[in-house]
Image 1 (cartoon, rainbow, N blue to C red):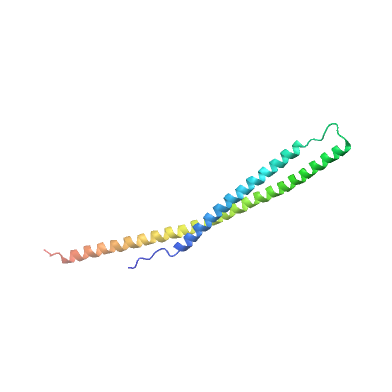
Image 2: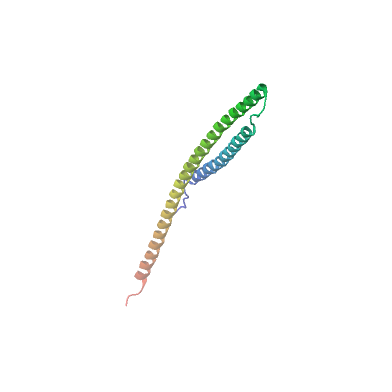
Length: 143
């Protein structure tokens, strides 16, 4: 009997590679999200640090308000980037889950294949032993 390997071994290797790539994408997306959160916090601190002067000329007051408005715009943009980064993390996690399910499906097929081969081999060995036992019983001299 020729020894046949698991024919989907290449597919399993590809599924594992896809899962590894998905894991790396999650790591990158989480790093980007962390950076986006830090940007939001920096803009919030900057905005909080720009107080309106108590006794100021109208020009200084207008300049301060204009600067605060610019920082508020940057904060709004940073919040948008953060939301997008968080959505990307969720998307990459879904991709990772899908890749893990696909890999596990192929692994289950391999496990079934291996179990079937083992049962077939054991059945063949048991038949060979039975055949030897039967042949030996026919060769024994009868009294």
